[in-house]
Length: 235
Image 1 (tube, rainbow, N blue to C red):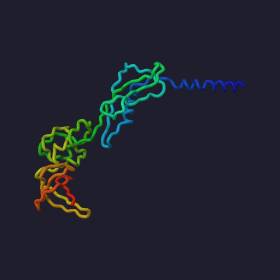
Image 2: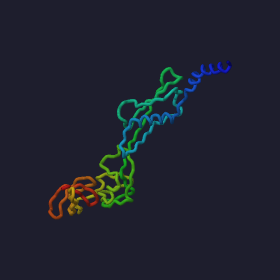
Image 3: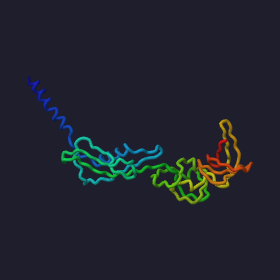
Image 4: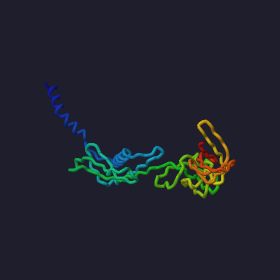
């Protein structure tokens, strides 16, 4: 009988133990920052080639943070798309307060894109080599022109004007084919490829359409820049 009575008392006390397990605790500053970062990551859409840097505002250790009971919730303070500056609303139920506690945390989001930069000072008319350039990631607000993100797109190009070290290279800094250059013209059909020579009548970089004068016929036509000294036309 004593055993049965003890088991009966244990069952009566189980709900109290279960409630006691859900103990309120004060979240750490790093935990709140990570919760804000997770809320941003859940909503942000980033291009495949880009990187994202998420930086919550720094919370001071003296800032009041109550004990939280149950899950801490976080959501964007507005329904707009993620921008450079965002506000995350963090809330939780607290036994210390008669109402849910809330904190508005400012979060900066930098979307970084790969760009080619100069590794050293490059003078005008310099032909770009592998050791002259590298890849860096820059915030999209710093990209104020058409730029290349593949090193192969600039190797062999001619520098048009002086470029300081650690400067992003935009298309107006160099020309893969410059005006007056002798170029190889590749004309392709589905089953045939023909090569001939011509002269560039204006400058261009990978993917640009430029005017070419055929060296033999003197006719002019548009062609697409495909590499150093090389253009392509489709017949």
